[in-house]
Structures are given as structure tokens and as C-alpha cells.
Amino acid sequence: MLVHLTITNFAIIDRLEVEFGSGFNVLTGETGAGKSIVMDALGLLLGDRASPELIRAGCEEATVEALFDLTGRSDLQAVINAAGFSAGSELILRRVITRAGRSRAYINGGLATLTQLQPLTEQLVAVCGQHEHQALMGRDAHLPLVDTFGGHEALNCEYRELFAAWRATGEHLARLSEAERERARRLDLLRYQAREIGEARLQPGEEEELAAERLLLQNAERLAAAANNGYETLYAADGAVCAALGRMAGELEGLAGIDPELGQLAETLRQSLYTLEDVAAQLRSHLNRIGCEPGRQEEVEERLALLTALKRKYGASVAEILEQQAAIVTELDELEHAEETRAALEAELVGQLTALLDVGSRLGAARREAGERLGAAMQRELADLSMAGARFELQLTELPEPGPLGLERGEFLLAPNRGEALLPLARIASGGELSRILLALKRVTPGREQVPTLVFDEVDAGIGGATATAVGDKLRAVSRNAQVLCVTHLPQVAAGADRHFLVVKRELAGRTVTGIEPLAGEARVAEMARMLGGAQVTERSLAHARELIGAPPQG
Image (cartoon, rainbow, N blue to C red):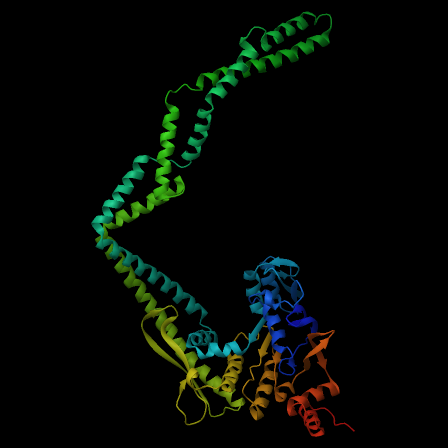
């Protein structure tokens, strides 16, 4: 769960630190105090897009850092370790944005990419905010919710694989049909290309070998001069090194009987002489090879020019040209045997479609069964949220042909009151109803308890009275299985909190800053009274606040 959050130089926040606890945590405050800024900072930490505009005026960078307690969550520790970051019972995430527009993320002190950060934070925190209202209004999000509820991942995976293969075969067949329409022209072109590349008899690595040989040929005179000079100096010229060493070795050998040490030195000279004679022989052999093939440099240049011309047409290297040659041969074979290829592809397409329809039908049946269970579960949840007469159903509409998600389109329908017709959410649900539907979905879809922290960002918008009390009770029920952070403006919701935090905006040293304060005792009663009665806090609103939170009366 989220234990500690630190925000520095973010928007109008100078430095803000807050300690959250398990259970139900609420954040309240007057409009404009900065509640949304705190949520934006948390979103940045979770992987949202960074912008220099978020940095506090006059500062060069903004930082958001959070400490998570992973005690008992070996699954999350394993995920972190698998990503290459050490993990124990604690996890520290940090996000930094700079005035220059750069963004850095850290996982337990190690530099991380957003592609590493986001999948991890999705398993740590689930944010349920106003943007999810928009997702609920669009039917594209409905089938995935049903599949999550029904646990259809295996069927979905099988369907997606079959759909991808079926579509790929269809595209292959379409390309073949297009090619067949220009078959004669295409055959001529492919045959010419195959012949041109084939006649070149390309060999992997030959361009590099030719380039090295050209370098030798271009410097043949210098190489020959060096080899000849070395041979002459060592062996052939008057006073050559080898002759002088031979004479010196002979003189020392003649004196070995007198001084045995000179005999040892003579032996060393003889060994050096043999080595130098071998070097001289190799230089003479190298000299004979340099320039021994008249016209070879011209051949090399012509071959390299041919390779350059082929690269302009078929690829950036000999390896790419050979790959292109293989593709040309394959396409040429297809066109020359187009009827057989088409028949094979059509048969494959039929088989793939049969398998796809089978899996799609099973997936559709599973969705219908899950949709009925989801509707019943949602109606029970909505009844607890002061929508006792509401009906919630999944409508499945068959598609004319298989789609990426299945054989049907799914859409949630709602009748918010008894006796009303079922209509799509986008056409009937109010903001308050959407808030309650979203909360109910979070309650009934599996996996919610796997995410240790749930953040509800003003999902109670548009509701009040008894409904607000019901929402508060439901959020408190959710908090029994996961840590809940809720930004709310409703006292009925805040009343059930285990911890209450006040977001305040003040002016310090001529600048506006946002801070957060934990509330308890009379301070909490005062905030609840403000939420109940507005700016005018009266004895009556204070008494009502104490009644809501179960605080003892004063006096």
C-alpha cells in the first residue's frame, strides 16, 4: 500500500509530505485548494505524461516520490525483481521533471524507463477518476470489462492468435490477387531482377574483402618498395644485416673454446640470424605477389561498381541484396504457380475461419453467461447505492464478420428507474449515476483486491443525500480489502474515513502554496461542519458533524 507521498516544486506545491494508512483515507478541502494538483502529482508518479508547465514558478525541477509497503506481497516483489530492480518489503518510486522538458523515473534508486514504470504502477495503484466516466460512455470499454469479470483471458488469447493468423492469410491472399491482375508485368520485372542478382553470383562478405584488396592494390608501389627495401637490407645488399650477423657469429664461435660464454652468445646470434633470414624470405615472397596479376585492380573496381549499382536497387548491403533475392524468388514462385498458391491459401483461410468461429462462439457464450452474472451483481451493488429499481444488462450484437475482440460487439444498457426502458449508458446515465456505476463495477470485477491501493478521484460527483451515504458505506466496504484514497466533497463520504486529510491553500512570503494536514478531533469536526454548511460554521452544523463521525458532543 501507499505509505508516504512527497511532492516538491509541483504547480503551487512548495513541499508537501503526507503519511497514508491502511483502510479508508479521504482528502477534502475547499474548491481550488489543490486536491486535483495532488492527484496530478500522483498520476505523474504512476507514469502520466510529464510537462515542464507542472514545475513551480522559479524552480528548475519538480519531484514526486512515494514509499510503498510490500509486506506480504511476494508477487509484486517478484515482478520488481524480474524487471531488474531489487525489492524487499519496501518500494520507493521517484519521478523528476526538469525545466528543459526531460523526465526521469527511479525504482528503488535505479534509473527506469516509463515502459518499466507503468506496468509496475498498474499493479500497485488503480485510479478511478472522472476520466473513467468517459470510458464508460464509450462501448469499446464494455467487452473488456465483461471479459475481466468472466475470467476469459485464455479464450481471449486463443481468439486473438487465431484472428491475427486469419487476417494475415487474408491479406496474403489479397496481395496475391492484386499481383495476379498485373501478373505478366510483375513476372517480367521479377524475372529480370532475379536474373540480374543471380548473374552477379554474390557471396556474403565479398564487398568487405574486395574493399580490403582494393586498398592493397592502390598502395602496391609503396608496399613493394617497403618489401624490397627490407629484403635488400636484411639479405641481398652488400653489407646486409644477415651477412654481418653471420660473420659475427662465426668469430664468436671460433673463440668459444677460450671463453664458453662467447659460445652461448654465438648461439643466440645464430638463432636471431635464422629468424631474420626467414623474415627476408617472406619479404621476397610478398614482393613477388604484389602486382603479379595485371589488370586485377580494374577487375576489383568493376566488381565494386557492380555491387554499388545493385545496392542502389535492392538493399544497403550484399546481405540485404541476398535477402531481397530470396523474397523475389518466393514471389516469383508464387506467381508462376499462382493457381496452386491461391488454392492453398483459400483452403488455409477456410480452416482458420472455422477455428476462429468455433473459439469466437465459445467466447460469445461465455460472455453471455458472464453478462447475466455481471448484470445481477451490478443490480445488487446499485441497490446498495440508492438505485434499487435500476436494471443493468449487457447487450451483445453480432458483427457481420469476425472482429479483433470477437464475433460480437458488447454494450452496457441501463434502466436507472423501475419501469423505464433499457438504453445505452451514453444516452441515459447522469454524472451521479455514472459515479455509482463505476464504483459498483470496481466492486464486482475480480482482481480489485490484487491491487493494494485504489484511488477514487471525486467519483461521488453529482450525488448527495442518502446516495452519498450509500457511496461512503460502499467505499468503506471496499477499504476492508484494499487501501482506499478518496478525494471527496461530500461529508457523508468523508464521515466513514479511517484517516481524514485536509488540502489547504495559503499565502506564505507573498506566494500561494498548497499543503496537506491530517485531521483529528475538533479539527476534523470543523472541516466536516464546513462541508455540511459551507463557509458559515454554526453550532448546529458542528453538532451534525459530530453525529456523522460519531464524535462525542462538546460541553
